[in-house]
Length: 462
Image 1 (cartoon, rainbow, N blue to C red):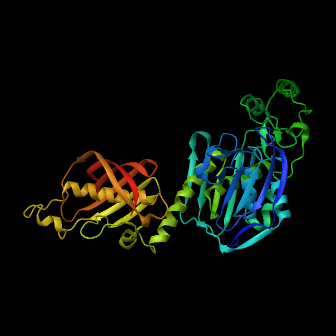
Image 2 (image 1 turned 90 degrees about the vertical axis):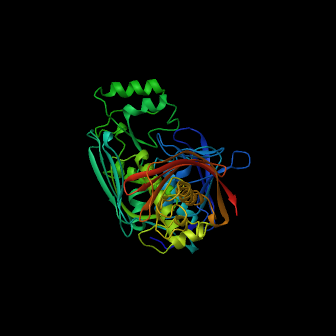
Image 3 (image 1 turned 90 degrees about the horizontal axis):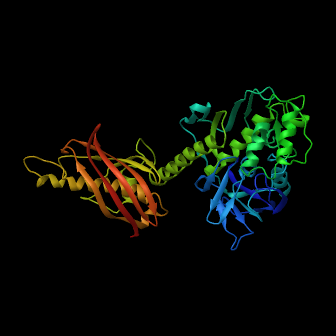
């Protein structure tokens, strides 16, 4: 895998029809500077709005991956993103004059060919990688879907599909090396569907641009040519179609003996590109589709953000943030800094923090000299400070901001906290809009709940 970020040398275009919308579209790939990422631009709309190609902008995964930000909405981007992933491109402007990229022949090859024709350019900025250091997984037990990623020094994919159909059956493939295998062995693999799905897709307003020239259609009925003719007539399809001896409509030859599973691998590459950063890990997928792919991509994106934050503030160790990292983020100082360590943080979602309570706490001198108990209001303050770490790490440049708490509701204290206790704060963010948020928190000593409350807070400039 490459060390430096990559883009293309010159802009280049291709035109065609969108798979699901049926809209004619010209798509233009344009070079972009380092750290720009991938942006789809709707050149047909006023002010040319754009959407970043990452998991935060996925709005639909029903029969493909759709991105949206404001007025900028782009359907079925996974094959384009797979081309970027396979060629290890990091920075690109993708300008479209409609809402769906041309489907081409149903594979990533048309995009790959154009990108290679434009020329690949290495940039003078290092790539950032997400390196998987512990297994991650996503499963759908009712559908037999499993997808796991394990540590690896490179990007690898092992994929298995298992359809109860003679034309497909069980298929398996593995991708070991992007540079050596992607362009010739995976990019040409075309999308596929079953004959029984075609009618349903059409009724749902999809595959308006679909045909036998951009998809492999697999026969899965027991009614023979009668069923094929019925579907052709019901959908007013112009293409001639017959039940092939191979189980594929019109006996269209496959490009590979296991082309369907190779295309599934292509979809997976495109969906995982939505992490927003290349990764090093071995993905093992069984019967996975867009839903599972995107669910894993969300987990991987959260892991990347967590690692990015941790690397910014601390040099490592069991804690995500040690006390020195907390001091860089929080404005509080002795005797009012009441968080010692951050054990876990999911940016914009959840934080787990610790506070060690000792007899040296200054408040024990007066609360109470003969019976030291941590004041409940300070337990709330400590919880709020942990929430402040969570909130500040949901924004850019947290060192320049401060959190003001606006309200505390439903505060309850269940047992006293005394010297020697270690408090564990667990807070979840429920809403975050316009620099204001709602979160709920619980405080534990061991496995015992000692306090809880709901908070509202606002971020302000320091």
